[in-house]
Image (tube, rainbow, N blue to C red):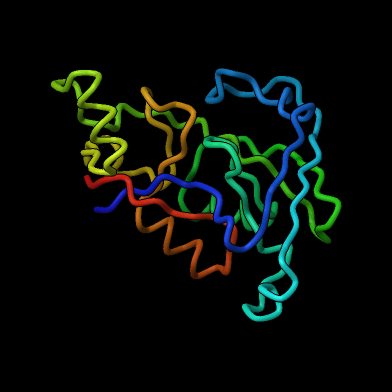
Length: 180
């Protein structure tokens, strides 16, 4: 099974969460937020790319910073229901969108990467080379997850990647990270 790291796809748009808005996110990103003030997420979509590819602002999603997945609320709820994803859906202000958007705070943290026998340097090398070995048993029932070592990053299976493609979600880049 292929595993991907979810990142922004800058070929379709530019995403911006201003520095003063980043303080909304806690450093221990996998914890449930008790207090939340919706930040304002700004993005610009290239008009000619949008026209050519039939994209709309409402289908955009963003993972502008590793571990900060933002998307249309309805699509996030559908994804959460389809895959049983344990996540908080927290409101985000998107002035250019006609529908509500949310920050998908994934709470599932797994011991997913099989690297205990590797040195720190070897771990970094395999991660950077996108040759990470994931524990198939640990991720068997999880389409979207965080790893306990790389807790600030979102990983997904090829099933979730395909679901996003099938549902017209744009703005995400699924970087092959390894296999399970």
